[in-house]
Length: 251
Ligand SMILES: NC(=O)c1ccc[n+]([C@@H]2O[C@H](COP(=O)([O-])OP(=O)(O)OC[C@H]3O[C@@H](n4cnc5c(N)ncnc54)[C@H](O)[C@@H]3O)[C@@H](O)[C@H]2O)c1
Image (cartoon, rainbow, N blue to C red; front, side, top):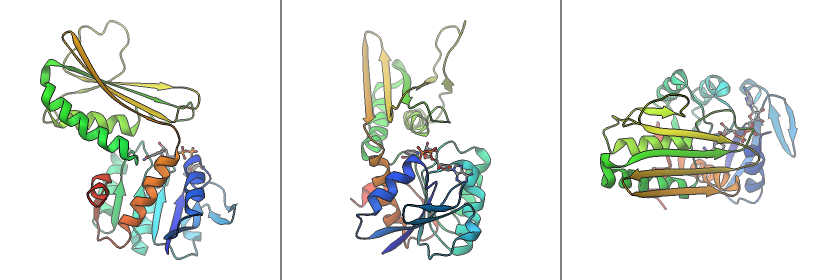
C-alpha cells in the first residue's frame, strides 16, 4: 500500500483525493497538511510538516505556492517523492523545484487530465502545420474562487504552441484600450465566474478560416484521478523531473 500525504487536504481537490483513495486498493491517504490542524474525516491533518508522524511514501500537493519551501525541505530530508499539482508558481518557486528534483523525484503538471495532455500535443501539431499565417489566441474559463490567472493549463498550451516557433512568440495577457494592430503574439484570456471547473480553447485564426480545439472538464474528479495515477507512477522512482508524458508512455 502506498502511503500518501495530501497537502491542501481541506480544499476542493483534497476532498476529491480522499474520496477516490477510500476505494483504492494500492494507495491510501495517511495524513494531510493544511492551514488548520485536526482531523479531516478519518485522516489526521497537520499545520506543519514538522508534526507529521506517519510513514509517507508520496506527497500529493493541491494547495498553494506558499507551502512549497517547507514541503520540499521535508521531502528532501525524508527522500519522499512529490507530486506538485498546485499552479501559480513564480520564478523563485521554479528554482526550488528544479533544485529539489536533483535529490528526489518530482512530478509536476498544471493539468492531470488525459484529455488536456492530448490537447497539448494537438496544439503543437496544429501550430506547426498552420504556421505564421494563423493568429493564436487561448481562452480559459474557471470558477470564481480561482486565485491565479491565466491558468497553468493555458500557459502549458501557450508553451506547446510556441514550441512550434522556437519559443519566439511573445505571450500577451488580455487587451485593453488602443492596443494597435495585432502582432505575432499568442494572446491569453482568463474568464472567471460561477462554478466552471475548467474550460480551455485554442483558436487558430487565419484568412477566411478559423480552427479551434477545446477541452472542458465537468468535474474535478478527473484531476484527482490523474494525480493518484502520478503518485503510483512516481513511487520508487529515482530523482528527476517527471510529468504526464511519462505516465502516458506507460499506459
Ligand atoms: N494540476 C491540476 O490538474 C490541477 C487541478 C485542479 C486544481 N489545481 C490547483 O491545485 C490548487 C488547489 O486547488 P483547489 O481547487 O483544491 O483549491 P482550494 O482553495 O479549494 O484548496 C486549497 C487548500 O490548500 C490549503 N492551503 C493554502 N495555502 C496553504 C498553506 N500556506 N499551508 C497549508 N495549507 C494551505 C487551503 O487551506 C485549502 O484547504 C490550485 O493551485 C489549483 O490551481 C491543479
